[in-house]
Image (cartoon, rainbow, N blue to C red; front, side, top):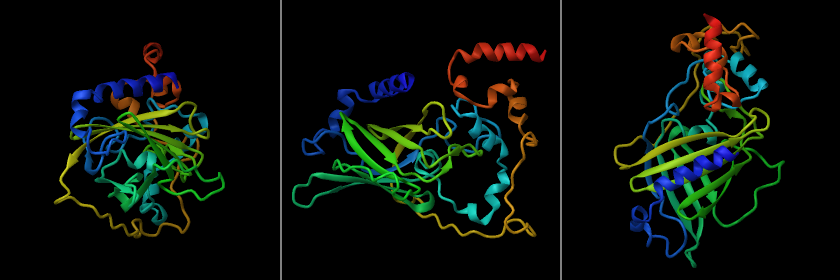
Length: 292
């Protein structure tokens, strides 16, 4: 957690210079924060956009159970009709290809900020971030793809806390995220760029929080695709009813493909908190020496 907090502080320092934010100071009627309203699209800068390789779990603090589920996953899973239009959960969907619209909802009389709304073009999802200090629902309340989110301004940073998420993918190569996961996000605007730092905590699949970043750039709404019609169809003929593509333990034929492509030890690709830190480079050299 110490490393996560330090990372967030570094990002906050990079984007929150007083001069850069002065142009937004009058837009909130003397309330804290800045105006995030507008249309945004990802500015690709890391692995968050695209499809990671099978068994590429580098830098993800997964536990043994999550690793086993990831290695049992087959890419053909997405051909099953039940999964073709399955919505990505909030922690994952923000890192994919999408158009994002943000706007505010205010009380009609006081004009006090009540909530911040988000529309995500991928799977046509809507998020509400409640800004009125309401409590989160009880644990037994229904879980949804976007979960239940509350937010607060910390200076010019919007911090969002989300619970009640459905189970989904942590990464698009079979790494799971359970319905016990919670999500903490930080949104920091710097002119026409929006920095998004997310931190997933999941006691069922992770041994430490998993931190990712995305950068969005402001776009014109005109000419953008805001719809996502999805209709499941039969993609593989004569597939037995109820069949779910998978690999049994130790039978995934692609487990070493990613490691071989980049010439790194297999143990380094299989994730875990240890692979997140610079000290792991020493172990990688030791593992590489054993292969010779």
